Length: 240
Image (cartoon, rainbow, N blue to C red; front, top):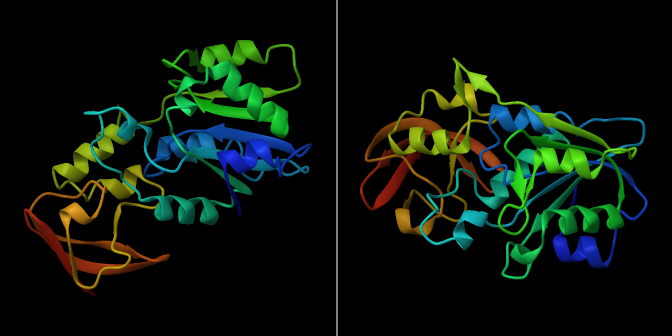
């Protein structure tokens, strides 16, 4: 999988003229709803390149008071896209300059940097300065062109919409057993660079409350089963 920054993608244009199917999103945690969108662009065949645009850090960090913690770290997200078989990952830095782009400008820049063949987004997709562009706007934007725009409907599990906010709530309340049903790769804590324990302040990941849990841990590209003990200020573990 190729990985480029937004700056590299727009300035060096490594995918110039490459027929591509794309999707755009935070994709934090890669839940089953995300997968319905990703399947629209992955493994297209017929020479169509799959490109995922996501963010190096969660855009919610840019807006004070709205960030509840990452479900996946950046490295976990990269590992997930590698396993899913994405051809290229574009990492966007959500900066003061980027946030000024309208949705139309954003997609125009993408269209000038590769050959757009397909766009897949969720039904509730919004982008651009002040969220000025919705999924319906994207459909209108490319109407009459040869770009196939797929708007993926809401995904439900047991009648409930699957969303990242819901998964964060399950983690924060310690309801981890339900997460394998909702997430493509399940929930795991990234312990890369730590031995046996870490402070809660050492990570931006959302962590379960105080208690004991059996779960997988992510360590520099590998997953290992472990028994963890979560305290108020730190999390410790023993591998099983």
